[in-house]
Image (cartoon, rainbow, N blue to C red):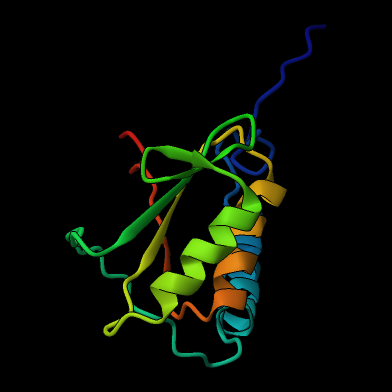
Length: 138
């Protein structure tokens, strides 16, 4: 006696991918992101300054004080000490209009060396102090 096996439509194995759980998970994630994104983007309202990069012309009356890597101070191209710097800045502060003191600091110079110049300029009454830098290479 031979057994015969017939498959019916109900007993056939489904080989299709069931995408219903995937759609459910995606909808839940979408709802979570829609709720959390406004919370992340809203922060304290501040007015940020607008950047302006204008080339400033060096005027002949501006004073250039430089600091090298060893911490030595130069008035234009001449080497001076801290006491002489204070005297010269006091003389410059009395001019009308007062010139700007521009500081050129070496990248290897100590902060203290540049701080001495800023402190001496403040004590002398200089109101305009600028720093000369090189633009970053692109």
